[in-house]
Image (cartoon, rainbow, N blue to C red; front, side, top):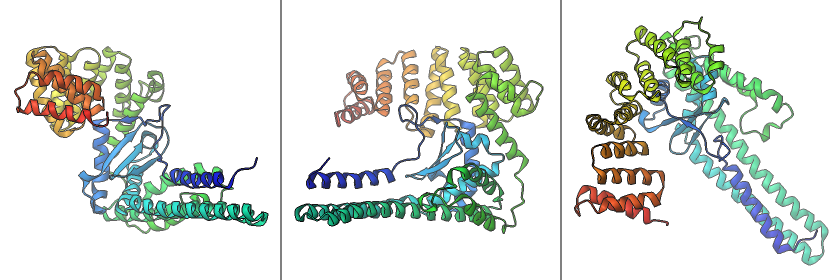
Length: 460
C-alpha cells in the first residue's frame, strides 16, 4: 500500500515520540486496572527505616527525606522514582536470606538517588528523543525529495536514516542506563563500608538474580540491556566488596530475628491458612512460626486459637509493640473492638508516635459506639494526622466520632475533607456545602469548608 509523503512524515514523527514515551515507561508492577498494590504495615516500615538509616547518612541524605514504599508483588525487585522514593517488592523481602541482602539492595537504590540518576536520565531522554525526532524528520525529508524526483535509492536512504536514528537513540539510552547501574553498585559498596556493613548480601542477591536471568540473556546483545550483563556485573561487584574489611561480618542476631518475623508476617498475611501451616507446622515453636500461625488463624476467624498463640508471643517478648498490635487487630477484626483497646494502648505506649498503630486504636475506640470512647478517638486522631497528614481514613474516623457525639456539622466537614483527599469532588462539594451553613462566617471551620469548595470547583 502506497502512502503520501506528508502522511508518512506525520507517522514517522509520531513514531519518534512513541519511542520517547517508551523510554519513560515506569517499572511499577500493575494489576488489571494498572494500579500497583501498596502495603502499609508499621512493623515492616519500621524495619525498613532501620535498614536504611545509616546508609542514607553515609550517602549524605536526610533519612526523613527519603521514603520507602512496599509493593505487594512476588517478584524480586526494587526501584526508585522521582521525589526520593524507593519502592521495594514484598517478593524481595520474602526471598532475601538475610537483612544484609535487603540492605544491599536499598543501598544500591540509594546510590541512584544520591547520584541524581533520575534527573540525569530525564536529560538523556531529552537528547535521545531529539535524536530520534531529528532523524525521523531528515529521513522523511529524504523520502519526500525522492518521491518528487522519482529516485528510489534516495527513498531507501531516507528509510534507513529513520530506522538508524531510532536505533541510535535507543542504544544511547540503554548505554546510559547501564552506566547508572554500575555507578549505583559502586556507591552501594562504599555506603556499606562506611557503615561497617558487609557487601556479601548484595553480592549474593545479585548472584541469585544473575542465575535467573542467564538463560534469558544468553543470546541477547549486551547493548540491548538496561543493566550490565549478569556475569560481568557479578565479577565487578565481587572485586569491590571483597576488599572491604567487613565482608565476612554477620548481621546482628536481633536484626536477623526481626527479619525472620517480617517474613513470617508477610507469609501469614499473603497466603492461605493451609499454606501457612504447611510452612510453619505446629511442631515449630519458634517466634516466627508462632507469629505466622497466629496471623493465619485470626484471618480465618479462629480467635480461640489465634489469641493464645499471640499471648505466648507477648509473654516471651512483652516489649515488642507489634505483638500487642496484632492482638488488637485480631480482636478488632474479630468484631470485639472494646477488647482491642487495651492491647492497642499498650502498643501505643511502646511506640507513641506511630501513625498506623494509633489509627487502629482510634478505629477500635470509634467501634465501641460509646461517647466517651469517641472523645478519646478524636484525641488519638490528632496524633495520627501529624504522622499521616494525607490519609483520608483519619477524616472518616473523625467524622464517625463526631457523629457519635452529635456534632453533625463537624462530621459533614470531616467527610468533605476525606472526599477531597480521595479526589471525589462531587461528594466533597456536597458535604462542604452542608457544613458551611452551620458555621459562623470567618470561623476556622467555615474557612476550611470554603477552601474545600474552592478546591472542588477547579477543573470541573
